[in-house]
Length: 394
Image (tube, rainbow, N blue to C red; front, side, top):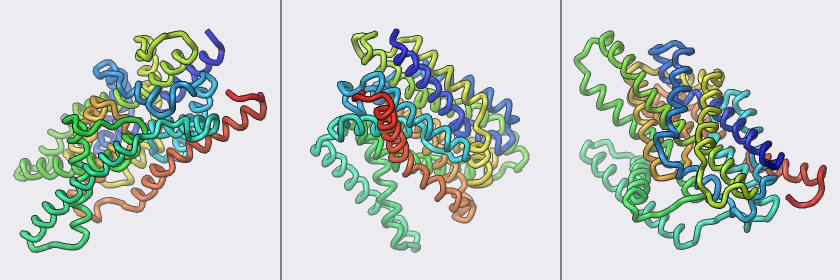
């Protein structure tokens, strides 16, 4: 096997390890915040279920990563290696700083940066204008419906405010576009799906967790607080496991897609089909990263966004796990960080606007927006440095 391919496989597994290191907070932040389990127990639980996740779902996301972002004809083993280097550097840097970023988006940024540096913007698989127009149409339909329904409800309660239209529009877009995808009316993938779900996945997590948290509060409104905490601390173990499965099934496929693309580019396989050993190796790498834990990120997710009670931890984990599982089933590589952070904000918001520390949220949002372009710049820089040192075009 070519040494470049071997190095690329190792770097892809390192990326998944860094992914688990940064995203460990996604599965266990709420469990640690409510003391349902000790930190060590929570990390062990997340590691085990991260390993199971990819074995329970399809490898559709691996296909999106490996052949849906950059034209496969441009993806040489060396170029994939450079893309991985850019992504790994960004994820490790943000993990060290304690900033929860999307490892999936870092990888996509790395692929874009390396591809554009090597072959220009023509290397990117841009969506057709017709597909963009169709997506905009469904977005406008959702925004109008959401704004109309929300404003009608607000008028009925007598507390209508101008921002109600904006909120309703966002809710409508968040509901209609995933529904259109699920029913087959909207067929999107690749870079367009990634960009759309930067907005939709945290909003979907927020709304789902807010609704579930509100429902739980209503159903158990007459239960004594101690009994309620005891019940939901136990339920959190199951919801955290569910979330860890969703995390593993979505994010572990990043390395699967890269390794399979590298094997295909190197002529070691004849079609894009993820080998079983790649599934196990990628899952194990992300689980090991989770087992070591990104403790600075965990602290920010568990303690600095909002104060989480056990029933809210259950609602947040269940909502985030549902979003991840749904998107994985449709092959959309969404950010587990975005979905989980949105869910934590959602359960916090059930106690009112002031219950969420919006300054911390703004810091996280900035990191989200910067991840794809920053990883692209780092990967592009790695390409030009490598070309200057070695010479030629990769």
